[in-house]
Image 1: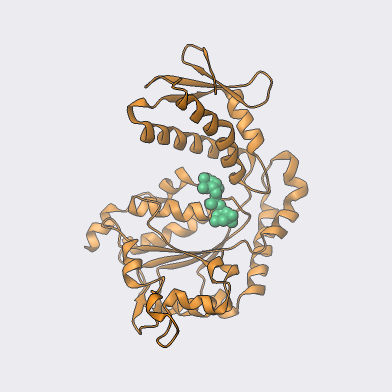
Image 2 (image 1 turned 45 degrees about the vertical axis):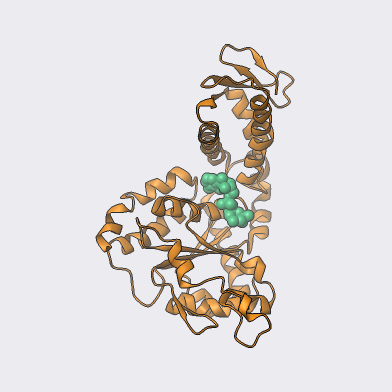
Length: 340
Ligand SMILES: Nc1ncnc2c1ncn2[C@@H]1O[C@H](COP(=O)(O)OP(=O)(O)OP(=O)(O)O)[C@@H](O)[C@H]1O
Ligand SMILES: [Mg+2]
């Protein structure tokens, strides 16, 4: 079995991740050696394969990194056991994670949110590693932090029915926006207008802000059990330009996947791309704003083109910047306007 995993994890995992995650080289270089340890059969026993805390501004690729890793290892972004820590803000809610202990009212109904079979279900034939994501960790009640200590340290979680979950074949990610606001304030003067990324000096400063915020919020025991704290960088104009290409590629795939033979090929002019990039560049929301802009400016009008049966199957749909400068306009392969 071991050998089957070794052959099926992509040889150059870092390159695969780079195709999906833009501008976060440090994170990619930090994460991939841990997977190599697993591939080589040298993962340590009695602890998770790796524990990562991902920090940094919103919309910079933290969650996306975890999804891209799942896709590379298992063939689907969905192969992640995700715990939304915002659902565990009160101490008693944390019990849902491990199941309510006997004697609690209604305990029969509370299945633990994490158990061994759920953990195993996110691994795959290709790769026996389970990816676990604790999203927005700072929102959870301290009780969750205490539960996590055992998981991070000994790779075990005890459930209310006295069974244990083994996390030895797991790679654990935690994400947090701790310090993110302060990071943006630090960057705002330089970043806001130029769209230029931070220099190396300010990246170091961001890391210091992140680490200080984490140390303030979590106990030293907790911080000690994290293998790497990775601070994601704000995305500059060049990064957003590449992300735009990725998202347009994904949109094209989506059109073909959904519409099948009725699908069409999108061709965007430089001016149309420029408009999306200009409207979608926002230091505050990272690539989220770009995604929203593509949705509003491109996908919604395209839906109207499809509903109006204006795009012939297999044809080309040209996308131009509207002459008014406001929004985009659409034409068929011969340049005849399509009403969106
Ligand atoms: N570095 C990046 N490379 C490629 N795509 C990105 C990157 N950052 C963000 N995106 C795009 O933006 C979307 C939102 O990013 P993501 O969910 O990873 O943000 P996040 O850093 O987890 O933010 P939050 O702190 O708000 O959870 C992703 O689905 C992806 O399409
Ligand atoms: Mg996220």
